[in-house]
Every structure is written in structure tokens, then in C-alpha cells.
Image 1 (cartoon, rainbow, N blue to C red):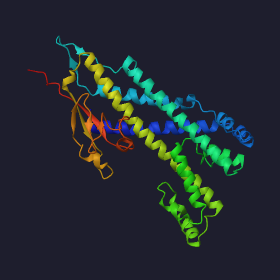
Image 2: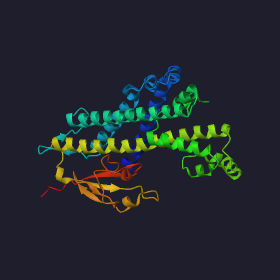
Image 3: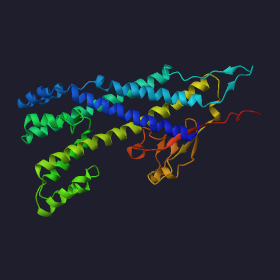
Image 4: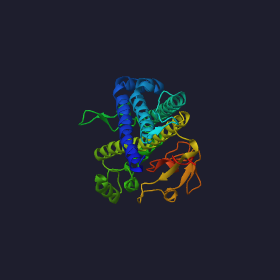
Length: 336
């Protein structure tokens, strides 16, 4: 497969998975029982409010289906790039990627279900913390519920909620809001996800030694939450597109080997980078690094990666990585 084709495939499924995640979050927000959440908070019942949110794996069915499609696309693209193969008698060998192969199906099921479970577990922790903090600060129950699920925006979609953010990202929002409400709001200007259109208002408040006005502050926090959600979707989609496509690549080649179409010893992989200024320093030196099938690459930091975005690698090596792995098959390797 040509490197640029694989790169394009990653970009395509990155965007598709990003949309699937956001659609799942929006569905979860829309299905949350706002009135029930408010009533539970009035009673001081955080667990009851959490139940009214309705966290359920089914909410991420759109993500599951899209991830499966990405996995199948990776396997299909890998085998379709193989040249016409023939056996000793001259008959053409038909090699197709079988997503229902037991090994491929087991990885797909386990990886996807584990990811959704981890997302939901983190959502429960984040929501409990958000609601408990709101109660401790005396926030109106209805306001706290709306901060959780978001408010209906001009598009008819709920915006500015914390549902969908990780626990750490929800904490970013809390600290940002606290900075804006302090007598020294200038600290908020260091936040990368802030909406810079509000910077002038922050500077005026900072120069006066007073908080950003509440009406402006509310808009800023909403914008920050929206940007944090997009940031989360981008990081997750890129990482999972890498995992789906590169694992499918392995599975497709394993299936071709099992079918007798290629020899495993003839398969190598080359690490490719985006070759721009955004490439990690630890990955720049990896451009063109080759490894036999089953042997991991070594990053400039010393980390071992089976492929770009390898979920078993440190987060510093995989989050938002834009590299890809190019399969190379030497069909003359065993020809005397």
C-alpha cells in the first residue's frame, strides 16, 4: 500500500470517529432527564442525579459501529494492496479480509467494549464530582443540572455541558472558571483552550483588579467547555483510528499468511511521519525505521511501539500522533 494512501485512510477515519464520538455525547446529553437531575439535587441525592443522566453503553453504539467499520476498512485496504498472487499450479489466490475471523473479532470486541466501559466509568466519576462540588458551593440545582448537560444553543443542540469531558478536563474547566471569578483573572490567559475573542475583557478586568463580569464569564466558560469537548474528541478519534487501522493491518497480513498467500518472513513495516514541524522530537528520527513483522519500533525516547498510536505506549508517545506504519512485502524474498 502506498504510504500516502494509508495516511489518507487514517485522516478519513479520524474525522469519522470524531463525529461518531461527538454524536454519542450529544445523544447522551439529549437523553439525560434534566428535571429529574434537578429534583435529585434539591434532595441532595447525587447518586439519584447520576441515575437520571442515564449512562449506558448503548449511548455509544454509534461509536461501536464506526470503530468496527474503521477496523474492517484497514484490513480490506491492506489485502487489496497485495498484487495478484498465484499458487504453484498457477491458480490465482483470492485473499480477503475476514472481520469475523475469531482472532480479529475477539480483538475488536474486547478493545471496543473496554474503551466504552472506561469512558463510562470516568463519566460517572466526573459527574459525581461536578454535582458534589456544585452542591458544596450552593449552586442552584437547576443551574448545576444545566451546567452538566448543556443549554440549548442556536443550532438546537445542547452546548457548554461537561458531559463528554474526562475528569481531568472537567477540572480544567473548574479552574478556568475560578480564575475568571477571582480578582486576578489574568491567569486565565494562559489557558490554551480559551476563546481568544474574550482576551480583551479579561485584560480589562485584570487591570482593574476585579473578576470578569458574570455575563461575559458565563459565555467564556461555555466556549471553553465546547473547545475542551472538541479537544477530547480529536485526541480520542486519532488514537483510536490508529489502533483500529494498524491492528487490522496486522490481522489482514496474518490472514494472508495463514492462507499461504505470503510468507511472514517477507513482511516488514516502515515507520512514516508527517514530516513537518509538528512531529514529536522522539518520532522524527524514526522516519524510515523498519522492523520485521511482530517486532516493535523504538522511539527516540526509548519507548517501544508496535505501531503509531499503540495504546500500550505512554500517552506522551501516542496522543495526537500523526505518524503511520507502512507495510512492505518482498515477494521475491524466498525466490532462489
